[in-house]
Image (cartoon, rainbow, N blue to C red; front, side, top):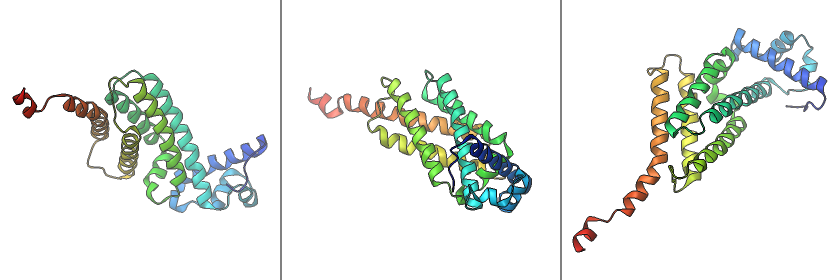
Length: 215
């Protein structure tokens, strides 16, 4: 963003431009969006748009950031509701909320459909950091149940696996799997991953067959 909105008037202008950009994305598709289309839809001059956004890519990036912030509000709400549930249930609940948010909004669906070629590095990084902290707090709350040996590595692999799989699935026009199958498989995977640390520790605590024979 070229100009950070410090005053309410500027923040209102940015919100108006992003609302207009979302409408243009839905009406014309992402590939056909232009800054002129957005300015026209917002009812402002192209010069006013360029006070805040350098180009089409900057506009789309800001739109992605806004959608991500709104998505995280939903995720945090579901996390609070299910904080005492097991890993499989809370993963399923969060994923169902994410799918609902994206699938029920045509602009979000169009953005996700092109996620792999958009300027999304900063957005995905912010999403990863937020989810990493949320998951870390969950695992620490349930540390007796999930004794993860290398928590940073587990969270990095688990969260990025979820992000890529969900984004890839939602970008498919004709997926071969049903939504419930993907959510179920991801929930099972993450739960098994978190429980694997305790399984390894239990295995090390059991005496080996050679030591049993010698005693």
